[in-house]
Length: 393
Image 1 (tube, rainbow, N blue to C red):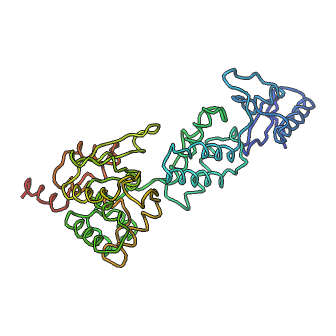
Image 2 (cartoon, rainbow, N blue to C red; image 1 turned 60 degrees about the vertical axis):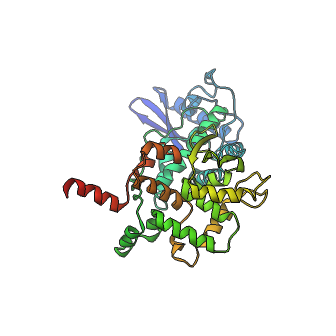
Image 3 (cartoon, rainbow, N blue to C red; image 1 turned 180 degrees about the horizontal axis):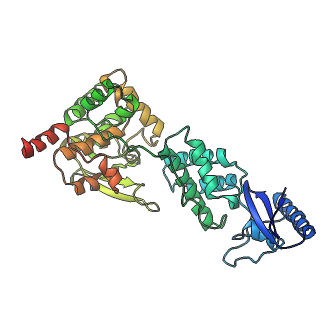
């Protein structure tokens, strides 16, 4: 339903379209003509709702009504149906499921878009997307999740929108300019076991603190010795040693192939997916003598296999890798280790403690932004203490 308003000699018409309130200026007309305009506007809105008519791309709903349903159409756009949020989600996810993004990233995108759908509804017409509607999503989710998660949801929606714009499913720029997010907390820096325990005694959150753990080289050696003594699939120990001595991500370890190992040259070629959006890239990381020895033995068992780690020809799943680590560390002091990323943290910290050039570390682990570097830009506390004493005693 639409409503008439009069201000001075002019009439205005207010109405709701796609969940948003709009105002059309009718102008200085008689009350009868204004009423007729309102009735016609309601007819046109009803025809859009029943899909008898379609809102032309690039045309606002107000202009559509002011031109009595026949506005001039921008030649840049081709006729299309008015896409719903549900249609966008379905088509975008179907497109990127072809290997364009990581399996884990795909699952995360699906979750993000489902939360957007909870706010706007699957049948929400994307032509009605506004800054205000996006802000409503931020306000609704703020009670449940951290601001950084909400921003990731909006970023996923923006990526889907931009894809849909190229596919002529939507038109215009994603209306996110001006969004206000709740203030977020910077992630805690990486910290050693002693500091984690100190913070825990002071009342810190165990889940948050153990996520920040890095192990020194002796602790890494002890953990790996423990893993070697436990009953586990044959790939677990060489995969963990590779993680600890190269800083490779879990997904990179899962993608690795036997051909990526150059024992004579002492390097491993890492297959990346995160550094460049539309291209699979690689980086080369030197491998230590202990790792060379272990991989040499392991490669002898992988002849003819397409995957460096795993069961014969079957690729490893994220769930299998996660559970394997949990089982070998269970019921030991190492059970506090949250995941494979701890070995990446530890590798970077070990390099920092030896004064390795930051540029070399970046090239080995694939860091690109200052935000990534800042969490790791530290030395072991003992090294830092020794450094400050050189200055002040």
